[in-house]
Length: 264
Image (tube, rainbow, N blue to C red):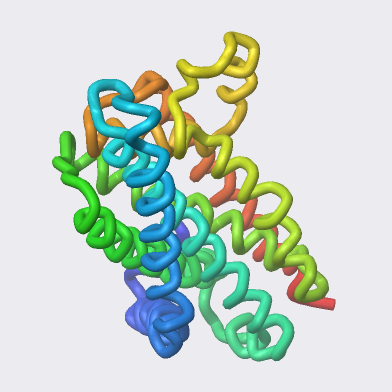
């Protein structure tokens, strides 16, 4: 943190940080038809299929219609996938095209490089979350139970998966490597993270197994912020998210300082 405070006192460091953030935001905004619009269309299909067609057969869940219940999970799912995808594709693209070297030789600390990429992922994740929320409001009513908790969980979750995407990009050696984690790890964990169901519906054994899924805590914390219901203690969920963010932050910073995947 002392390094970050020292960097904040240097005007050129602030310019460097804002430049990286601007580059990251402009990169995905230039192709908004590929980065911002598709999640809204995908989530609209989820609402039509699960909400209108399957929802009435399931009935209420924790006092809410099925469509209302799954809406926070779908919003969080879009935040997770887009924050992750933004950083992993951006950093790996910079490595592949070799313009990451221009950033590495610049006289700025690694922590600002890290924060620049992560901020870009957070902005895209939150922006897509807002678009998906607007889509959800076309299908159901949503009332925020706790604004501060909702915003905190969204930002921290986007930061967490931005950091995870950065780690994936550092270790990736080819384009296939950046699709393995989303396909075989991220997607299964997301679908099994309580997006479409309450873990109270599961047998006791599988309830305990589900507690090992970190996405379960994020989905339930966000659902509590939106609807006021959760399968997990909010204190526990918030602690897990905070701890995971701290661990991945320091791991990412350590990898950047060592030049893992960046220097041959």
